[in-house]
Image: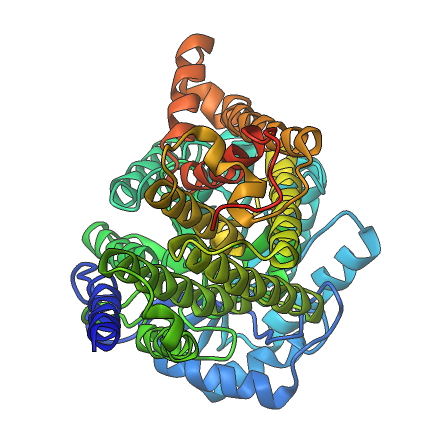
Length: 568
C-alpha cells in the first residue's frame, strides 16, 4: 500500500509539474485580422534542398502557395532559375499572391548569368504578379562578390525590367557600402536581432528594429532622399542555441513576430517576415537554429498561432503519458524488492525513477525533432538507446545503494564504460563548440541521463554512506566498478574542465572580434568586459558547463583503492 501511495503521488507530481511549465503564454497583442504583409517563401520539404539539388514538385509548390494565399498578401523568393522555381509566379497568380522575386547570386559567373536572365524573363512575363525584384541576397556579407560586380548585375536588371529593383543584405552592409543606396530603386535590409553581433533579448527587439530602420533611413536620406526601405528579413528562431541574451524558442518567435507587426504598423514600415516554412536543408549550413525560423513546420503544421496564447510545447501531455508508463513499468518490475526500503529511501527512489523516466521521452522527442537526415536520426536512436541502457543500470545501482546490497561488478563495469563514453562525447562536442560553435547547439539533451544519473547517485551515496567523504562519489564507487583506473579517470575529468574553460574563452572571443561589436565598443577593455558578460549570462552555456562539472567531479576524485565488495 505504501508503494502504491507513493507511486501515485509521484505520478501526480510529474503531471502537475509538466502542466505548470507548459502553460500557454501571453506573447503580446493578436495580429490584426487579415493577412500578413509578406513572407519569405522557399517550398522545400523534408529531404529536399538546393544543396543536393532536390526540388519540390509542381503539386507540392501549388499546395504551399494555396496555404500562402490564406496567410499573406505577398511572398519573397530567393532564386529564379533553380529546379522547379520557375513555375512559382504562375502558381502564385493562381492563388492571388504578389511576389518580390529574387535572383540568387554567388561566386560562379555562369550561374549568376542564368539567374539574371531568368529573373528578367519572369518579371517581364508576369508583371501582374512580380511587383519587385531583388538582385542578390547577402552576397557582400558572404564575400561572394565585390560591390562593383554586384552593381553591374543590378544595373543590368534595372535596364531590362519595369519593376523596382533592389539588393538585400544585413543593414550594416548598406552602411558599409553606401554607394548601393544610389543604385537601387528601394533599399532592402535584413534586421535579425538574434544574429546581430550584439544579440539582444526578444523584449528589446522591437525598439532595436525601430532604431535600426530610422538609422538606415537617416543615412539614406543624405544620399537619396525619400528612397523606400523594405525590411527584407526579420524573424526569430524557434529552436537552437542561445547567443548572448537571444534565446530561441517557439514562444519567443511568436512574441517577436507579433511585436514586429505592431512596430511596422505603428511606423508604416514595409516588411517581410522570414520565413513561411522551417527549412531542414539549412541545418547543413546553420545547424538546428537555421532550420527553425518558420511560421509553419517542415510538414506544414502551424508552429504557433498569430492570435491568442502560445504553447512552447503543445504536445507536452504525450511526454507525461510516456514517462508515466515507463515509471509504472519500473515500479511493477521492482515491486517486491521495493518493499525492503525504508519510507524515505523508497520515496527518493521512486522520485528518481520518475525523473529518469521523464527525461528519456523528452530526449527522444527533442533529438528526433532536430534530426534532419538519416544519419542524424541514426545518431539520435543510438544516443537515446545508450541513455536508456544507462538509466536502467543507474536505477539498479541506486536501488542497491539504498538497500545496502553488494554491487554487481558486471553492471558496474557497464556503468563505468557508458559514463566514460558520454564524458568523451561531451569533450568532443564542447571542443567543436569552442572552435566553431556559431551554429552548433549545446548538446545538453544528449547527456540528460549520465548527468542526472550521476548526480542522483551522489545524493544516494550521501544518504547511505557513513562516515561520508568525497571519495564516496568517485566514479568506480558510484557505479560499483571493482577496477579503478585513476589516471585514466583524472585525464578525462581534467579534459572536461579544460574544454569547458576553453568554451568560455572562445565564446567571449567570438563577440570580441565581431565587426559591429568593435564599432559599438572601440575601447578594448570595455568590449572585453561586455563580451564576457554576454558569455557567462548565457543560460544554455552555463547549464552545459554545469553538466561538464558533474561529469568531471567523480572522475577527478578517483584514485582510492576499492575493496572486493563495494558498499551497496
